[in-house]
Image (tube, rainbow, N blue to C red; front, side, top):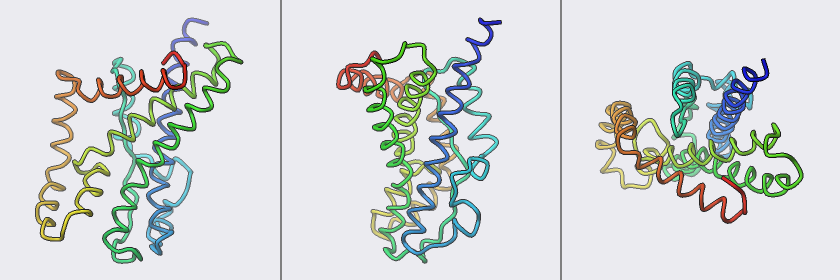
Length: 217
């Protein structure tokens, strides 16, 4: 029984970290729009930290579950995109850039917070402690989600960030890439299995983080 519980516990911890990271990520998009005068996320019930409002059956549950159970070296996922109206944003085109940036930025802030908390409590608790395991997962998951979402392929935030920085003459290109983005994203994920460039970048950053914080990551 203890062996079974020990096998399930890491999955539960990873799933909890993913759910929290994705929820805060999407809430941050809505908050960035709300602070600029757009009420769309609020009116659709998405300006909330309730994870149920943000769950996407495929991106939040199915894909992470498959990756976790298959022993994938990294786990990615996504939630339902938070709606916003760029014409309501006080900052106009730059406002849409800020809305896109808010999600990955929230992940990087949670990454830093988890790392600093680990630095403080790691000497005080055994390595097998639940809190240690949870914070370690929060650190890893938020680093992966933050960097993954900066990839400039729709529907990831990187595409919104990039094309809202470019002049309007690139809008037609952005529209075409939005249409083909999900297929490009699937192709990138398939290629990652054979050529784990993204995984190597994440591993390198985790090793450097462990050295900075003096933690065995």
